[in-house]
Length: 485
Ligand code: SIN
Image 1 (cartoon, helix red, strand yellow):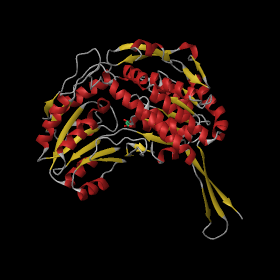
Image 2 (cartoon, helix red, strand yellow):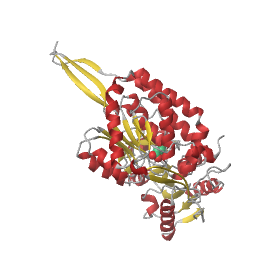
Image 3 (cartoon, protein in one colour):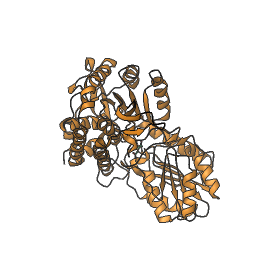
Image 4 (spheres, protein in one colour):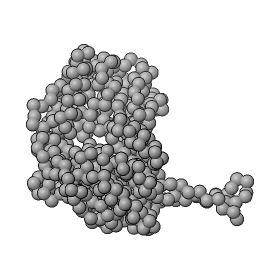
């Protein structure tokens, strides 16, 4: 395997615009930090608004030819990129761990998860279909066709630096769109590595343009206001999503918004407790809890809450916290000091209100932004940790007595991305699943993410779906033709 130094030194650090790797205007750069040490790994180009507009111009110039490119050929480029990512999973994982922090095992599994979106959409590229039907009154025919939506702006977060990219880029390419991608400034290296792979896989110049910037508003504002842009897809916080949506309303852009979550994890008295604890470990610790589908709060039937809390604490207490590159590390650092401070604050609020620390409860002393895997028992209803997105390895356990109480607690949130339900009573499980106000449910499973499934939320968690058959629809427009025979 390549060394840390080699992987960073060989990483792409310039903007990709119209097929050319180039510096930002005036040579501006921004630092990329290793969150496990707090040290700068390297610097990457920091785009100006003119650079951003150049990227959109390149996407616009390439749009016509790319839309006319045969679907099979578009799919084959994605398929080749899937293969290259899979072959290079170890190096991609190391680069990701260095800039994002999660363990090498988790990064590797993200690389494979990310690559699967390319495989899935390589297969969808050839299944874009229209419809031919009779006008009900017999006065002609109704023809519908699907066409690429046009140049897209794809804004991706730092928590899954590759997968949140491939699940936007994959369907955009498959549907025949060109794009400007703006990755989070904390994790630009993985996205540039992905862009290099797509170029090597044969993606024509200008179809994918990548810009990084120390100021998101400097590059996003002018793009959103530009009439050449047709679609904006964003994954990130609800707060930023609302701002982008307001900006995008000026030009009525097509939108996909994958925003915050506050997933409830319900454990009924008839649950298989071993399975529930296994699921809880995955739903809480995947990505160090920094995921919008992380279980945020555990609502457990009062009769089994003590047992569940103790068993979950025993499991989380055994996890090894450390630098993601160290063998044996389970839990890497949080992304930055601000995120660690938020977790510290939420735990302090809960314990001040009477919650009990069953395991963990402390931040590391540094360097790096570590926080121990933590289980809080007897968390009272008003604790902030139950209503705010934690984005850290903290599991608060609250109790309920009845099914309707559990459902009410689960739905008592502005967010509606995912919920987890553990019950062996089929009728109850399906009743609860139907009553949950979320876009996704894990039924006796702690992980819902799958490239073949429609990922997305309701309420303040956003709208639009990524993955599954629905994912490509976000990048297509329907044209209807009234045919007079
Ligand atoms: C997210 O945290 O935004 C998504 C995670 C996933 O796809 O599993």
